[in-house]
Structures are given as structure tokens and as C-alpha cells.
Length: 243
Ligand SMILES: Nc1nc2c(ncn2[C@@H]2O[C@H](COP(=O)(O)OP(=O)(O)OP(=O)(O)O)[C@@H](O)[C@H]2O)c(=O)[nH]1
Ligand SMILES: [Mg+2]
Image (cartoon, rainbow, N blue to C red; front, side, top):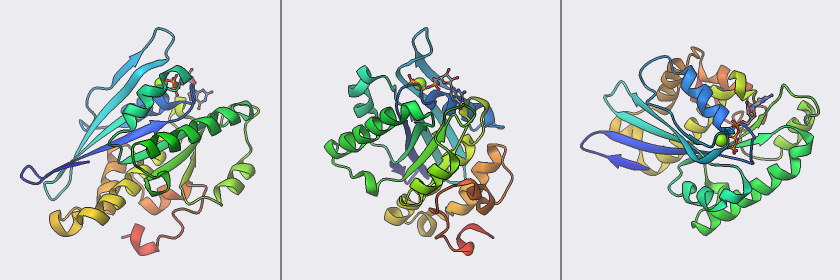
């Protein structure tokens, strides 16, 4: 995270992490397509010819708040193939928020678990604790057969504190909700340490709702976060999310 006080500018880094082929690049592409104004910069994807991410994808988003405060969000995906572990570790440096994209297929359960353990390990070696990071979990590929059932995911999600969203990223379903969930948590963590509201008049609910609109979702945040299948957002008082 970088704050430039003179320029009234905040730069955030959000990283999409997960096992190979879980749909990280599909998420970022759908996010790019959903942007209905000039807030999305050029999507950079570094792929091999078979569509596997080689280094990373990067989507730079820029939002101006009504208080003339600029928030830049750099959205990265890591390459999921096992051999790119050192690149994943490097990309995690300086991350302010994380989205873990899990593959819902039953046969991918072990790959999801391995990637999650690796994420925890890499953060630890960067001096960070996963439980203190803004983190959203997404179960992708809900359209496929042989997936972990809704009730199974509801049940496991209820134990954790993270927001959990379902998605079908290649057609965009659930992508914006996931991103907004992560943005909301990330802004919350930064609000805590930097007092954005008091210092710059930057209100995170207004900001995230504005962002939702720019991503084609003109609904109150409370409704958008109804899509979250874990209870993570239930603890927010209605006043937090409604105006
Ligand atoms: N059926 C289905 N296919 C999906 C979904 N999301 C992504 N895919 C497909 O899964 C394949 C892998 O998607 P990517 O987005 O490239 O996966 P990735 O996580 O970026 O993969 P790496 O870069 O290798 O780590 C592609 O063929 C996508 O079209 C989904 O929700 N449903
Ligand atoms: Mg990829």
C-alpha cells in the first residue's frame, strides 16, 4: 500500500491466488469486461500459447472518490502451475488483500488445499500472518458436474471468518461480488491503520458502492454481499452497509 498525501492518492495491491487452472485469469478478464467506464487501464496478461499464466496478469483500476481522492487498485493474478512457486511468492510481496480462487471440482480438493497451505507458508516467510490479511475465498466453476455441493461449502464456510463467494468466472457470475468483498475488507484494514475517513473524507461504503456501479452493479452493498455464502458479512450492522 502506498499513500501519497500531496497527490491525495492511495495505491492498493490485490492478489488472486489459487491452484493451477482454477480460474484466476478468467476472474481478472471478467472484471475488465465488467468495467463500464474508463476506470480500467490496459489488462496485461503474460501467458504461454496454451493460456497458462507464465508470470502474472495485471489489471490496473483507477477510481476517483467524490472528495477528489484517487484510489488505484492493482489487481494481480499469480501463475498457478506448481513450477512457478517462486514467482507466486514474489507476487505476494506488498499485497494488501487476497482472493483465493478454489476450483469447486471434487477432484481438485487436494490441489486447493496444497495451494492454500503454500499461501500461508509464503506469507509467513514474508513476515505476514494469513489470518490478519484481508482474504476472500471464491469457489469457482459452479457450472461443472462433480463439484463440491452448495451445502458442503456452506457448512465448511460457516467455521471460517472469511467471506466465501461462488462463481462461474468464465461467464462473469460472482466475479464482481468477490472483488467488491475483497476491496471492502482491504479498505477496512487500511481505514483502521490510516483513518482514511477522518483524514481524507474517504468513506469506504460509499467508495465500494461507487466501484460496484462502475462495475455494472447498481445495488446497495448489503444486497451485493447477500451473495456471500459464509456469515462473514452478517456481523456488520445494517448501518454499516445501508444508507
Ligand atoms: N466450466 C468452467 N470453466 C472455467 C471457469 N472459470 C475458468 N474456466 C476455464 O478454466 C480454464 C483455466 O482458467 P484460467 O482463468 O486460465 O485459470 P488460471 O487460474 O488463471 O490458471 P493458471 O494461470 O495456469 O494458474 C480455462 O479454460 C477457463 O476458460 C468456470 O467457472 N467454469
Ligand atoms: Mg492464469
